[in-house]
Image (cartoon, rainbow, N blue to C red):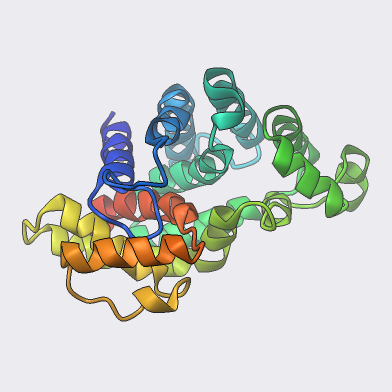
Length: 273
């Protein structure tokens, strides 16, 4: 499946590309456990394949968003990552990739990929049927302890799923205090699409892929770190010094790996428009 190839390529570029200040990269002295990020995704590739097929079915009218079992997809991806890695699993990657993957597949069957992607992604976040939200919360409860603590602190319990009917977006938003990557994705998805479109255009000019990944990272980081907002040149010495400086200051931008993966995947599809 082409999508899974794109996902794996984006994953490796996002994690192992050249110096990304204060975030995981191949030369990092702080972020050494890069494999756990990769294994989190690779352990659930079959689930992402199912999510992609579900998106195609919704896009062609064979299924609806309420019949494809989005909650089950969330649950299974979290379960597989946890069984592979335990507490080392980056579960927020699974939480971002399920609605994202379904949205990509759906949008391939529509006239405008970008506008369709935005629309379906936020429509998924609005799903509030208890079957899907219960499966999502149960997956978080069993396989993402810190996330479940955040849900309880926000007042999202199983007893309230049927009565108050929080949406998938409400549940993911409740994780934001402990999951900055989810917060970024929910808040800045339009910007992720914008950067993905720009990256897609640049990629057609045959610029080195590692440079493309670092450029995309710097664009995503502009709202998160003032010292990176004005970096224009990909000078490795400058990036290395910035990396050391930010790490000394305790800055951690590792959460940007998730939106970077999404951006790099999108660039393959937005670059065609």
